[in-house]
Image 1 (cartoon, rainbow, N blue to C red):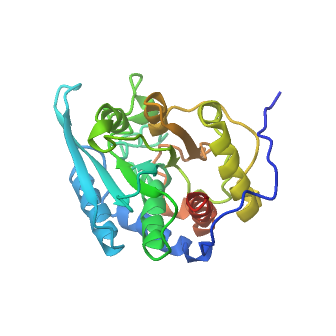
Image 2 (cartoon, rainbow, N blue to C red; image 1 turned 90 degrees about the vertical axis):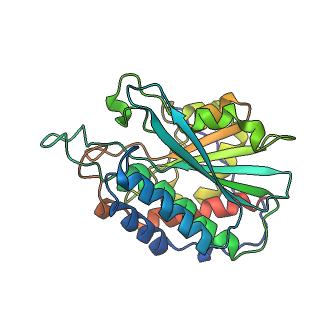
Length: 300
C-alpha cells in the first residue's frame, strides 16, 4: 500500500518575497553552459572549468563570502583532488540553513545501451542542481534579507570515487562526508538549523515525491516544503512517499542536521545515459522547484 504525506493547505505563512524573480530560463542557461565542459567528472579538465564557472557566477550575484574546501581522496589507486564550494549569504546570522547540490558528474554513460563509454552529459543528473543554486543565489542577492543565513554548498564527489554512480557497487559520496567531518571549521558554535539537498530537478513534467529517509529524518521540513510546492506548482508535487535514496543529505543527517532530499528519481530511459541532455530539461520544472525553495527560505 502506498504511503502519502498528509498535506494541509493553505501553506504556512511566509515573508513577502517576489518568487517571480526566480527565472527558469536563466537556470536553463546555466545547464547549457555546464554541458560545454563535459565530461565534468573528477580529474578531468571539465571538472575545473565547472568550478571556475560556479565561482564566477556566484561573484556576479554579489556573493563575496565564497570559499573552497580542498582535500585529497586516497581511496583509489590514484589520489583525487576534490573541492567543495561554500557560498555564505548573511554570514553574520547565527541561524544557518544549508542549501546543497553536487556538481560532479559520472565519467561515462555506463547505462547507455549503444555506447556505454560515451561521455556523460549530466544535464539533469548534475547540472540541474547547480543551475538551481546559482539562480537562487542571484535572486537572494536581489531580494530583502531572509530571516536566516544561507549556505549554498556545491558538493564534489557525489558520484563516488570511481565517478560511476550506481554503476559502482562500492558507490558512496565523498564530498559531503568530508564536509561533515570538518563541520566545526564552518560552524564552531552552532550547527545549521536544517538542510535541503537538490538532485535531478529539471525534467519536463517533473513530479516530486517525498523521499522516505528524508521523511523519517526531517518530517516537519518535508511537509512544509511540499505544502509550499503544492501551492506554487500543484502538478509538480505529489504527497506519495517514494523509496529511500542515499545522497548528500545522508551525511548531513548523520551529523545531526535535519536534512531532506528533493529529487525526481524517475528518469528512465535517460538516467546515466548519453541521452541525459539539455532537451530533457524544462524551465517550468526548474521554476517550480526554485520558487518553492525561495518561499521556504523566507519562512519566519
